[in-house]
Length: 328
Ligand code: ADP
Ligand code: DP6
Image 1 (tube, rainbow, N blue to C red):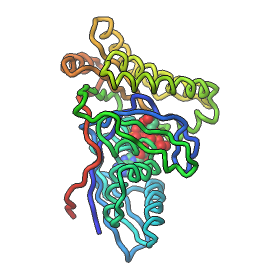
Image 2: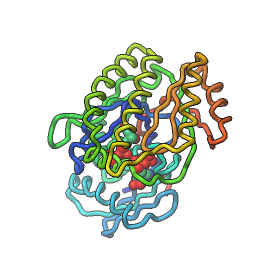
Image 3: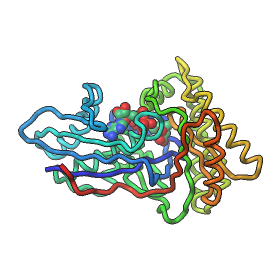
Image 4: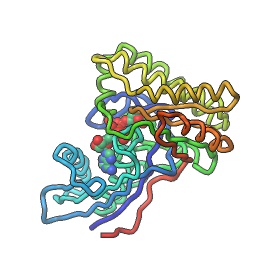
């Protein structure tokens, strides 16, 4: 009764920002991402029928009560489905910085959903697996699939129609996504807390909801037409609008650091020189820069030369969740 699964992180081109139901992780708005071929989580789940307490190991270290409680809450959903009592040892390795805006929660819960259901012998379809992963961390529902993925917000109260849908396979359009590391420490305001505070207190949030619908349509059109410039314009503008909502929150907060601005300015400068590059930023100070593969080396070198940039990782669209042989 054990299984191992690997899931890649994903980067949102049109952001998920705000929940309409916090228990079920139902989003206010549909959103869109690319699953990456680098940065992943590998999770092994070992089921014990003779034990009551779950154990959560992250990168070889046993996690404390708060993190383990989140894992147990998620495993409770699977325990309800199996109708049996069991405990699990969850042994997870993040090949990505944890809680630094590189989407460790997305790869983490996609890998956990896949490994845990396999370990207990539950056979779920991909949409069902996506619905389950969503209840660990919203963005995780997108990492079940590879390539370009839409998370349809759904209408139902029980959330069964709120899951990801693949819209373009990774091989259909190769883009370069440069993950620019300026800070690898855990952030102070987690995405969950940040989006909640924004929905509850930011007067700019209604503006976000109006704009994001249009941005989704523009981004999907650009993807179907393989129009890089159009996609770049809308993803950069969407990220700016998401971050603007945090400035209106009470108390206000900001995920950017001065190094974040350095990268943003450099990307805009590159465009003035005729190189098509666009940035997006999730809930953290690090920046992802999209460009076309023929420009990736050049753009990466220029960004790496900035004194406040620690490293640049070149990524491409990657695949969805996979199962691995179990090693312990
Ligand atoms: P990130 O930008 O890395 O996704 P978030 O604030 O969205 O940051 O999520 C970080 C949280 O995700 C962590 O505090 C932890 O609760 C959870 N998480 C990270 N990695 C894993 C993992 N491998 N398995 C389960 N949960 C994880
Ligand atoms: C800014 O999926 O980490 O990265 O559902 O509360 O776990 P929870 O939040 P999470 O939020 C991601 C927010 C974002 C945008 C995105 O990935 O779409």
